Amino acid sequence: MASIFVDLMAPSTNAALVKVIVACLDYEHDYCYLSKVILQKALTSTCESARRWCTRFLSALAHRRPPNFVEWGFRLLMGQLGDQSVKVVRQAIRILHMWLPYYESSSRWLRTAQLDSFGEAGTILKVHMYADENWCVLDDAGTREAVTFWLESFGVRYVETIEDDMRDALLSVRRTLTGTFSRASGE
Image (tube, rainbow, N blue to C red; front, side, top):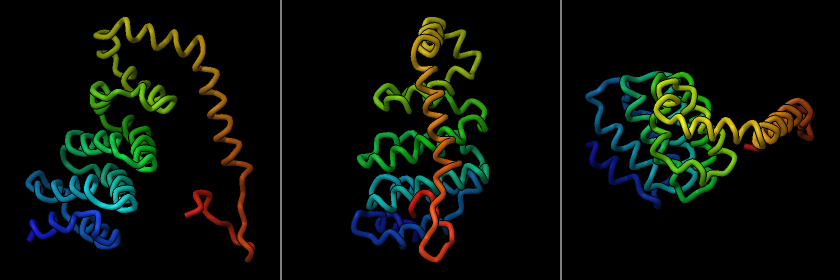
């Protein structure tokens, strides 16, 4: 039965069917290997909207804290950083920012990624690596370089980014024609 689900994870499969299959699988036990295989195939082999939804689904799974999520969940999220869709990559970066602080030793997954290719988002993701004292000791030169970069230039840009986000969140209220409030994301 599970092999049928694996075969259904294709670009031609309707995104709603992909969502139903992925959401109905069991991820709570270590023996649920096929569920993770199906999720991985959904994250890599389906249409863009399904891949975006499955990436967001990883955030919901992170909230549930299934066993060994720091191993398989973050591996899948890191894989999404290589997706062809910019929207999927952005979603993965947001989720990593949200959940890296909550999972001990999860920042080690960032050490293998080329974070510089993501621009400012990659620079901010690197901060999670330097939250680990052991990594700072092991990579003393890299740590000093990162701190110098933040002190000399990027710290100001980071504050500007946060100020822009706060301004948008607090002052960009949108109303529909009926007077109700719409979602800021436009979805």
